[in-house]
Length: 149
Image (spheres, rainbow, N blue to C red):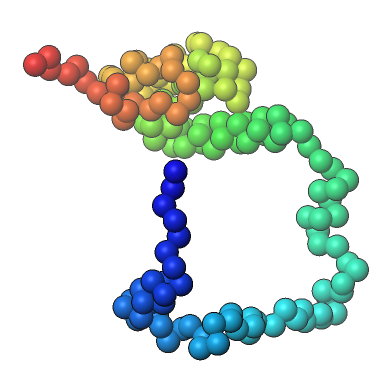
């Protein structure tokens, strides 16, 4: 089924050719690791003390759905902030989020308002208005009318 592994002599020859022969041990055994696995324990870092994340994660585990929901809501807030500042791509994203109810309660009227704002600078945003968030007006399917050749 598969190729057999090359012999040890072939590997040694290859190592010599590539210049890695000086890294090999002459006895054929691997040298012992030279790294030290010591831990310096300071006053703040005692062995029995738990780190902040370790102590809180065991007592407050959240379902993944809640974590994702929180992330989506924060994404909406950040996008809304940028959209209000005038970023056309973020205006399209906020419109899509309102249309689909992604990170915010579904509201087609607000979605239409944000798409109208974005369409003042780029009319092609209407082609992506009803898509899921993340399909912004710079995607290939939102380009101005393509010539049929």
